[in-house]
Image (cartoon, rainbow, N blue to C red; front, side):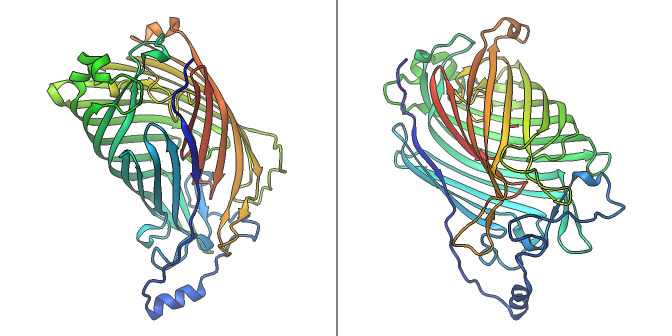
Length: 451
């Protein structure tokens, strides 16, 4: 097996900056009254509060203490509800790169009801990505004793962005593609979309509907992976059909979800179906991807802690999680939009898009446990704490095929690995996963759990 250039380093860190913006006498008074420990113990523990009697499905609401809702502009709230998180990486394919994630979890000072994020990256070889995200939660209430209550299942999201990816890979179709089949292409794309998730018939209900629409504009070119053929040379007919392609997607999904959290669940299950349909495409084509999925999360005995106590809002909890998903495509889509395995979610030991065809199935298992259940205080910031730090061992299996019945006879691929987990709070987990497979090692990183 030959060696492909891999990422040599991936580091995520927080840089402290404080910029004193202009403030009125009133805002100065609010700053003086603010207590960063209100509702929070010095070790980061959050005391559980009594919920209003009229709150529907109270176990589905997250309590945010007053100490995490600092008044003032984005600079004055730095390391409380606004963050700058730079990252660096080096890859021989794309050169040395760096980026920055600028996030404000109390955008427009709506008492933590809105989130906005700007994510920027660039490399010395010209690979770049710029994305912006805005989200507003639909059900949000003040707690009588301070802080707010937020139902995390219902929200509206808007995202826009531009990406110039130099090292996209295509290996052909099917479950028997070899690593030697690799080709590469450049993809310049712009995208924008809006989505809605809403619990029915009332806030916190088990039934969750999601709907959305997005547009994508792609311009493909010659790849930049050294020593590998360009996709337009290796697969000319497929490349020509997708070279300049626009897609207008409509998404609709429904799931039955008993999990106790959408961002970091400790128990419960979810089953659902989703259709992602490209009803408007270049050349008049129409295509869609239909998905069925299920997830189950179990609490397990803790390894490095006592599990907290019942009076704690978010006690440290170790879990074992299972996920299975299948996808089938109908109609016509460009090769880069077809169901695929490999990357951040599916078969994490393989490069993104390693296996691709009209249908797939995938299953994962993860053992997630906290090593530092109370996290740690950041030395240079008096009130900023990482809530907890943990690890996850995982294994992924799956396959692709030309049609859905053929999946029962397709060759099964497998990968395994270990993940590093950091949580600033329950709704904000960050992960780095190192996956291993017969092709080698892959490192992926991002916000949010894979399932």
